[in-house]
Image (cartoon, rainbow, N blue to C red; front, side, top):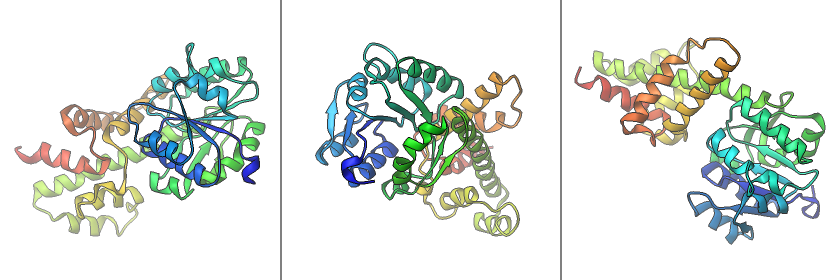
Length: 299
């Protein structure tokens, strides 16, 4: 896509991931409009690179061909989408809105209805990989929505992602992302406890890892936890305990909305919740090893 044909992007949510995505888009010549949230670091950097800052989500929508959101919770998405200063209030007919965050599928479907009534289209496209991948255009993008909307978004998604999936109708992306993160965080918590239990039993962590990683248990998630447990590198998985607890909670909520019990999510939900409540929320998920080690220390 030539620079003259690139759609104008309005981007909401310039945290670590969103800022990296905006940097990537600007490096490829996309015109970008942004809005500040809790932290100005990403916004100031985007403006320094030639981006435009506005004060409301309504102004974002009025300026953009495609509105992109990369936010922490469904509540945050809804707060930017709804109301007199929200995206929907400023939406131009034909505008595409994309939620890159990890949201509740039920919320996604309700917002899509409101966007359609305003003459726009809505897609969910949660992400895999890290901000470092985003800067290089190497994200995994799990998009869902109408075929015609995907056809329109695909060139932009391919500028942001190495693996771009179109998974089906609206909400499918968020559903798959929640299932994915439930499984990932269940594995992360189990491996973290395993290392801490090895400490308690007097078994060196590296010996435990060498055995477990030589068989079918070996996985990328195991290696992320080992990076902290053995090598002291928590940022190999730059995903906070607070966000992990949110995603597992959303998975359990999704199960409730589907009318079935989630048996397996109870343990990671509890472990991550206790870790957050005891001051570990801003730590990265691999540091659940430290939480469990602290929990076991005086027992």
